[in-house]
Image (cartoon, rainbow, N blue to C red; front, side, top):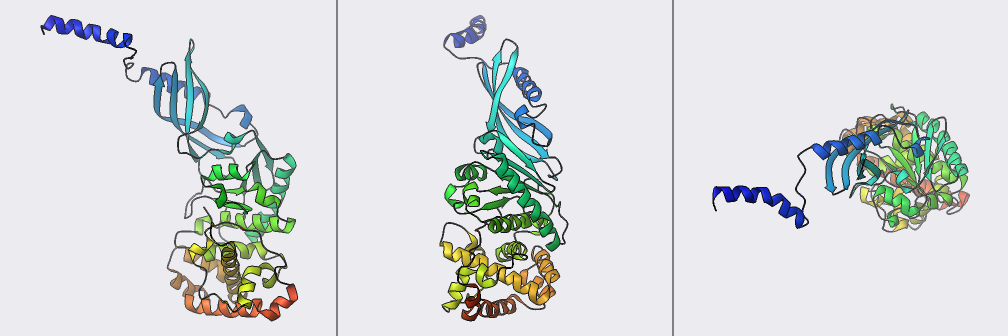
Length: 391
């Protein structure tokens, strides 16, 4: 091919591609800048329908753009905080949809990016209820329901603060989706994982701010609880929020779950026989646990009776420490167990090793859940609400 012919081919090639239905890429960055500018203008403030939510630091950062003619999709990282509640921004991956018209690119809407979890407002119009210490966001719920939850959570916060001397914000955010399936979608797990639960707590464990600490209510499980059960549940979950910074991968679940129940049951007046019916049935039949509940005993999807025994046993272990060595020893054990081996933490706080604590716990189970103890309260007098390990 002669040089002049090659030149003609280079000139004709873009036209031939266009006739064949192909489009040559636009000059690098031209349309990309326009799309980014359109997203920035659209996201300069939260949508009007979220006006009731105290949002701050609202911003979308575009990470990639995909164009198809007059349509475009931008992947972006949304950052925002809840004023007065979040110590650091919450982040969410979003997919922003745009259309190009005579005036340029226009955002049509957005939603969760592929594989990302939805925000509560993706599920419908959000309603807001506020308490002195509480912010409740709900979808598909009545204002009265959200107000009642805010009032109950407001009572939980000072109860937790009186039991936990560690530093925490003294505030809680509660999300109330419309259904169990909606709750599961928010958390990215199958609905069966939460069936029968009243609520769960989300957030990162460990030191530092926890921007995504939320109590997420299962509206179906919560509706089945008595007033006392709801109070126990929300106090339990609020305790997880308060103890977040002291909770690490080292912290055994029997301690984190048992401590939360110890706080929740402190002022209920319920006896061990009343509040630990499943474990009481086992002890009275001669099945005293050989060890403190292992972490796997708290996972859902297995035998609900065995899981109930794990929660009840964890509560009674923490109750034993508080009764025998004092509440300060229990909180010290919690704080130390998050940063050093459990045997070390146990020796430094209660003066014995985990084996000795287990022996004392077994003796307490026989005393408090044996036949004579059960006769006073009646078996199963007040089955406690099922909660969940921290997510």
